[in-house]
Length: 261
Image (cartoon, rainbow, N blue to C red):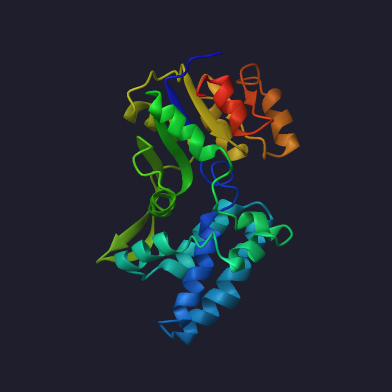
């Protein structure tokens, strides 16, 4: 079994099944009416921005959906608003949450409970002295709120994701720290003082967005929930297909593969 120095994971679609920005969108929409009672925002977010975001999400353009939502619905929110939303969006034990996540097609996109075994795997890696990190095209504020909610604060040495941009204490857009995961992985390796060639580094992902990051590490890992065609595409990739690991039985497979049990 290979001995790794670092365990890096994607977030949306990998560490959690869905996209917390979609859940967040509904929280912002509700807040526009209660307690803010802003009928204009309620209409524009609920009947213009939300349908646009759902069309993008269901067409698997989730990154574009998240960016559209931030640009159209979050501009003007204060830092306190964002902190509140980042910590209150996860109502995963409610009956309403259960009903949402059972919806066909859309349900999985709203599921923000950690994938079974994902938290245990990063905890095992950290306990065994491995360096750990998250590399995501999502938003750092909401990743931090999620890991705090699930008791994982301190288990990630670095979180590289985009941030919200502020002016005079209010959201004005997106502060990009990462445009694609190839250059993003290079930054993570540098932050963690790891070899630039990614030797002895595992990176766990689920989609085409993770491929540039796969190319930068010795051990690309594809999660069990990834689409079958993506798994086959990775197996046949000329850059990393000979070293990719498909975790067919979930995170238990990953822990066994890298001696983290």
